[in-house]
Length: 214
Image (cartoon, rainbow, N blue to C red; front, side, top):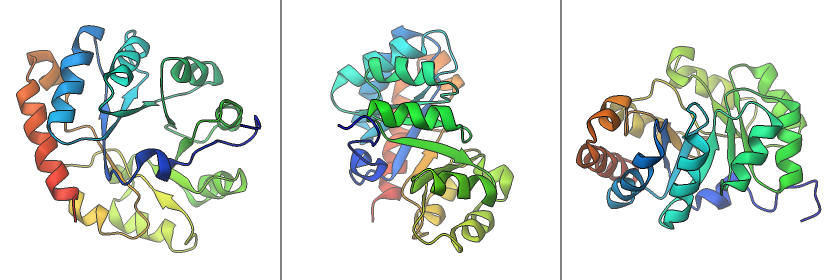
């Protein structure tokens, strides 16, 4: 690692996984059974968002599980990126493009996937040397027509659309050549976690994995 470039890319970290569960984990105590449910359903990666006080510890526990490649989401600052990587995050996702977050992730040698909503933001990401971005929030922005419109002028860019996507949308998004993977919050909602419905999470994950497998 030379301190300026990531040693891996989003594509290599995800290793062909086309489904990325996006998780907001309210308590560390839920991390272990959640990881078990996701792995039992066939998930190979997950994004733990930095939206709760226990996010860092939850990420650490899920990363230690061994069955998942775990990244950190909703990373807003370089300091959060540092904490996430220290906790075991293999990649970092942010809701928008931030030069300082991108730079710190490069220094840490970890792939960063910034969120974009416009062509201007996408051009900034490309100028920063990135070839993979998160389209966020995908459905409120217009869904597939917006994705196609952004992808057309930038044929070398890969997208991970996230935000408002449901199981019924999954196959259509994954059919797009520019889509690397799809992020989904429906797999483990606040309702599932509040009820401790890990069997429901396993079932939804298995259904989504089946839909995402060619």
